[in-house]
Length: 155
Image (cartoon, one colour):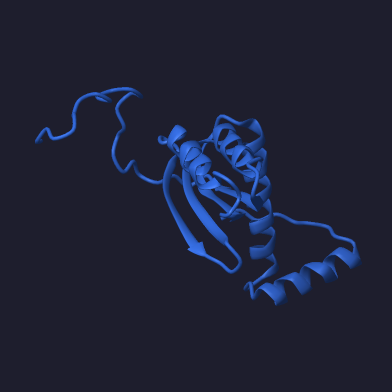
């Protein structure tokens, strides 16, 4: 553990104390640590090549044309990065979907941008962390074994 000294204006100091109280953090140090960590993560996201894990959360209107098909195609195109997804039915033909993702930050941002750009997607957000998940299964190169099994063939 390293210690630092921080000088704050009275106004910022009061806002920090209010934030600590509202969030239920144990100390100002915890609050500052969280903010610095978030800033470092944002900086790494901007660099683009850092491997990161995170979530992409979107809310969409499933009645919009072929949106469900376009979402599935996009997720399939990024099969190496999209680890899992969960969707929950909301009111009025809406769903919320959370995708668990891992890969280069730039690629994850690209996936989020493409999802948010689809007609019918109302809102969304990419949230990243530098903590990585262990590989669930090392994927072979794309296209490997695509014709390995045919219909009716036993394994």
